[in-house]
Length: 306
Image 1 (cartoon, rainbow, N blue to C red):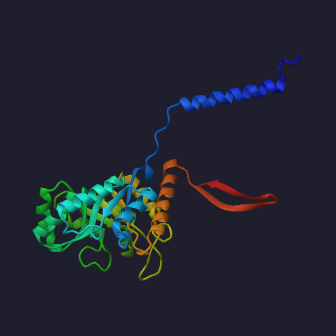
Image 2 (cartoon, helix red, strand yellow):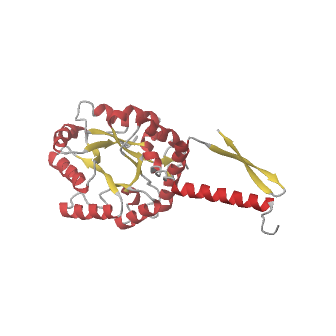
Image 3 (spheres, one colour):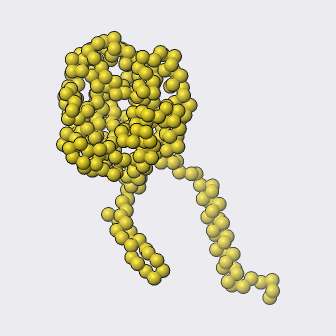
């Protein structure tokens, strides 16, 4: 009869109805909370990376790339700035949706007044950690001054040329017996140039690991050049896995030293690399495209789990 549905039409409507019901159920189902970026690591930038750019341009780039943490270099706010000037800069950064997690690297002498001024600078801009390069004889004065501040001090290692603290392992040994708020900022690149495994150094310094500078280097010995993350020879996957194993909770700051006049493309590529590596870790899957098989209709990638 003309008002009866054909078997095929009835099946089509049943399928459409079921699909609609599934869509409605999906819409009513509570949405899963978004996963934290960078697998929960506080990945940010040292503004030394943008030392030739203004602070406004730096903040704009971070917003575009989707980075929410910053370590401020004095090129963007002088150390001898007034408390009022610091509040203005802090408010500007916060309005951009970015949090200041550090400052420096600040050179410290054996001078309590100068050390105090540096820590007041960190406090005024809201940085929980001041990254410093102290003279060897400044450590007792640092130990005294830090008692008056609710923040951490992280000593940065600068590699083979550094006559004070070339290695993070030396920093870790030097801070034993000092206030627990004094610890290490491990620079991955300078550590690698010493012939040390950065991941092993992170594990050794873990009890006092308060900041990290992440970079990559090419293999142009004896003076390797800074390159975007993933384009060099440092085992950054091992570094990231170590940070996750340690449940590292402080700033992991990209320090991109190359191309100071135009660092943003290299910065963006570096943050993209970190996102990709950590997405693999986060999903628990690693995919390797091992080749293409030529067919008459085109190319088909063969994907294997590893």
